[in-house]
Length: 138
Image (tube, rainbow, N blue to C red):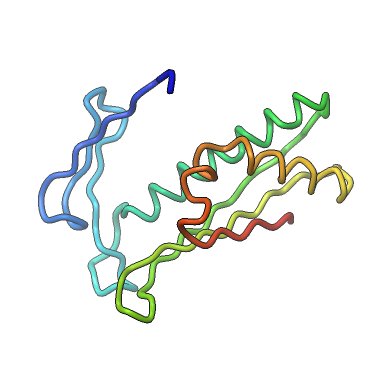
């Protein structure tokens, strides 16, 4: 692999209820277990950060797929919902639901772009066959 960029973040404190930051200071935030999982909530958590990263990456891949096909997009968005839960054996697992909004794009073309984005997106590559990912078009 020809590495183009490497991100670095450090977690400190009490695991999911600690602090995470990056050497460049761009990310510097407290982490808290969500209320739904018995924590205090009120701060970021790993699932929020993963959702933000996947949404941004998939949206960029969607835009690239459109440029490659000379399709002009306006006001598009991708929403990622990352869920965490225990499987039947008690191991924690993630599931992702991506929703792409492509206003003004015909349904067949929207599906083509979303399928292409799923092939381009590094997050999609990393999660493929590792966790459940559902992709819909709004």
